[in-house]
Image (cartoon, rainbow, N blue to C red; front, side, top):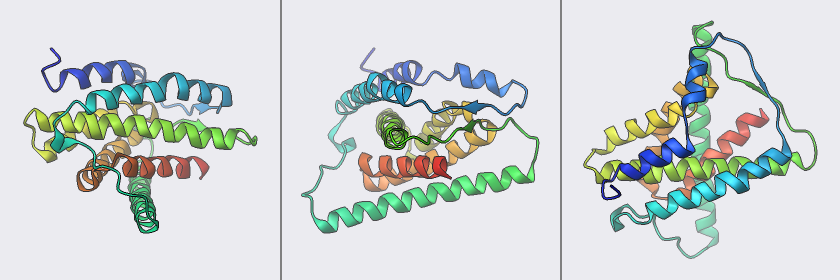
Length: 221
């Protein structure tokens, strides 16, 4: 069954991004939930889930045809670093604009859907770097799966680029059901943009940096 391009992404999606808990919340009453940040839990999840899961996803991605491979990293130069930072920051700004648009639309329709959870800010000295590391690991897993593996395997199966980006964005939104209806809408639009960015740059590191910068900025705000 491994010869079918979409078999591996489907299995990994069920294993790594089970949508059941989030989808049940879509039918629950609209209540504001509060999530606390735990340093020990973030470190545990990073090393026991996000990093190993990312390795598994990249292993299967690297089995794909050469034309879908990531661009080889060029020789590190000052110009290359500046370009990378520029593209990563530009991507994060675009994601923030998408998030701002969703917040604006949400304000036009108060009471629709349930609100995203209120995440408590970490205040200790150890919590801040742990939070940064945690969000980078989470972003790397999501981008390696949804943009590299899933989007790439959809192309391999004969799906055109735009429908492939839409399908990838739908699955990306489903695994963000815990953020509420508007959070899913934002994840869908962000997924479309990140697929476009990945198609243009073929750089997993760049879209991961944009994704992580967006998460960190929103969390700090």
